Length: 155
Picture 1 (cartoon, rainbow, N blue to C red):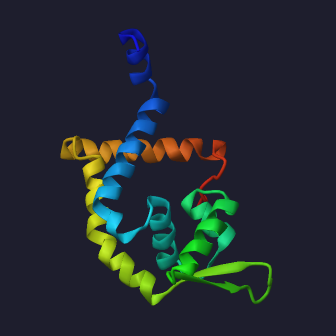
Picture 2 (picture 1 turned 30 degrees about the vertical axis):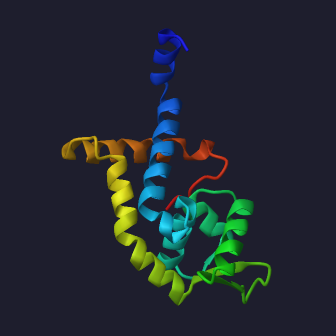
């Protein structure tokens, strides 16, 4: 790859965001690999623990993944005994997701390692730059939310 092409890639926000995501996945694996939980699974478990009984479609919006992927991941987490799904009382087609005691124990064990992975992802920034970076990222995500295949739930 020529320097010109390399520079062009390095100036593209999408390229840089994808690379940072790859780096974060590697750091998360370093810190949390022993728990056999992916970052998406961790996000789902965290959301389920914070909002027990959330319906699967709402949970998909909370985490920002499509409903089919969420259903697949939740099924795997249920097989591991980390969540349980219950049918809706008013609408039996709906499935509500609840954390198990195993989920709560796992999240407690992962708290430090997951925090370290997140901190390591932005560790190259000076402390005062980190807040600005996270604020800018949150703004970009919010502004572009409607363009996502799996928009986050707007509150």
